[in-house]
Image (cartoon, rainbow, N blue to C red; front, side, top):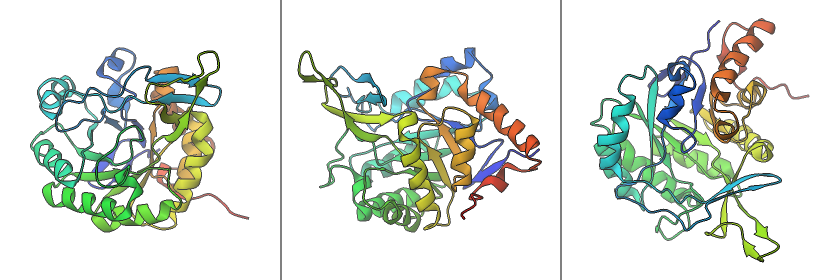
Length: 303
């Protein structure tokens, strides 16, 4: 049974990754992290960010809203204090980076390319909780900006580049093509959907930032549609994200065109979800007499 897939230069032992911001090194106490296809670490910026005002997370009947605002201590703290904790991990480590423009992305890529433990870069162009100051609310809302950032990073690193795009656009194909044209090795779809919740007693928004990113099972059909549409427009691999709670969800994403998947909100509900998904995928393939997980990619039957 072959669970291996390839994303750019990365050869993953299986297609299951943990999504940025939903996983910490302490999860290694709950399961063997070496079983994961890859780990995507929490997004970092060039300098320290304090993040958005609290409250930053709330539950809704339709999923989880968050507005963390990329709180982090900056790239030097990441290199000196976070990466060493994963020195012995026998899986790929992907650094997620965000900047206010192409120069900051380029500088982050340059510094992280020197770190032996970083195997790839995920360009977070689409966090719905911050403004990138590029003349648009998000880089991911401007296809020219997507192209220019990816191209700038491509010139400054030899690492595999994964571009994480926003679902909050009218035509995801346009932005997927822009990332591909810029030189991205893969795209990740999708980031969270912009949402809002209100406390009817205080009459105030539930989040300090008013709006936040909605994640969880409610967004899965929307993310699946984005993956499906993008898969018809580009030739580079797609990493599916959005409400993946078990192996069935993972299979759906792969059938719609994803080469790999990331587990996000499920990590907060069931920290063992990623390893259970790996096991579920293997059992599904055996049951269906399929010898390679790659045969699921884009294999959905129409009509």
